[in-house]
Image 1 (cartoon, helix red, strand yellow):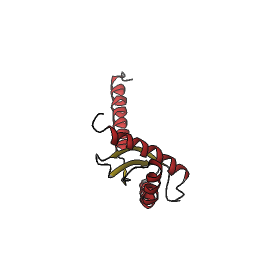
Image 2 (cartoon, rainbow, N blue to C red; image 1 turned 135 degrees about the horizontal axis):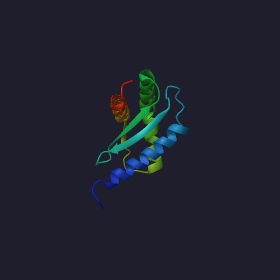
Image 3 (tube, rainbow, N blue to C red; image 1 turned 90 degrees about the vertical axis):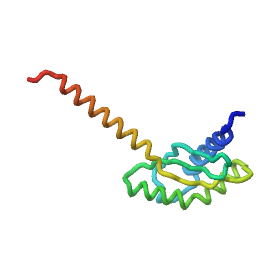
Length: 124
């Protein structure tokens, strides 16, 4: 068995279960449209960092982050029951800024491409 494969499998299972629970079982009005991007589980399976993105402005994203923090104890209990792990990892929710960074890079590349195509056009 390759090193790190068990934490990766547990992370995939946690992400899948959390996505289902957030869609069906968590009824917090502060929770907006949240997408779980990835889960990283420590090698000792004690902590699970859950990365998410939330639709909306910064205020809506902060509201979603607070709602996830409020739901964390419930979600952890449910994960423990569903996955039957010896120890259920502590869930730490973190906003995933990598998506916003990718969008910004794409926008910059698009702007550069448009500027280059405008400079290639003959003056009229």
